[in-house]
Image 1: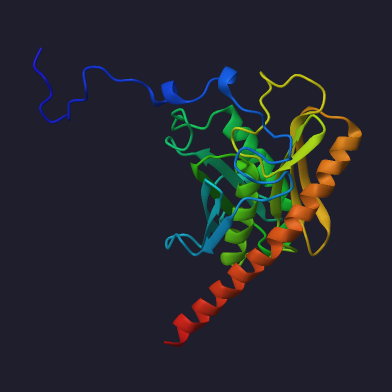
Image 2: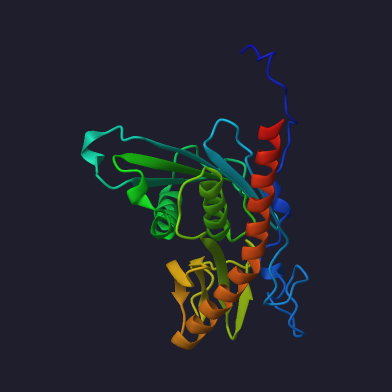
Length: 273
């Protein structure tokens, strides 16, 4: 059979990159005896964050966020006419689509949405919808598209924050910004902003008080727009995790305000030229 001369030939023997990742038997403790996690943070510490708006020129509004090694981009389109008549409503509509890039995880994701991505899309919509003034654009819809470029944990929480910034950049009227935050409950410890190695795994974490929680928080209104949890968690630890989530969201809020202030200032400067 003739060979494909246009295709770059790979090595005859190759190994998956997953062959060099540590197995369950070689994993270190999630939290050391002195309260330090594997990445050097304390239990209550957030990862370093970078936020920028206006990164997609074709979209009405857009935002990009880096939360540690988790990198997410979001685009907002609309308000525009409802395409299908069966979805017509006098109140505005909000749609969300959450997608992992094929190269974003340690294993290759599919081009089509899987069940996890569809579930995250619904949770993202539930977190953002209470904050958007839907009555301001009747008979129309706003479409939000979130893509995870690199996943290192807390992707849903970072997506909520990124989508909220993109809505603000698009000029969509909202009651308040929505900030996402995740917590991992590990035995008697609550870990803020977990990485992908710290996130809850239903197959390996079946004991009591092993789970995770993600909230969407509106800081100006002091209200929680959405909450989701996984695992088996006692009510006391659940309350503690929710309190820590709210405190972490309050820490993120000034960075979001500063980013929007800088973005508006840059747009005004550009319009005056």
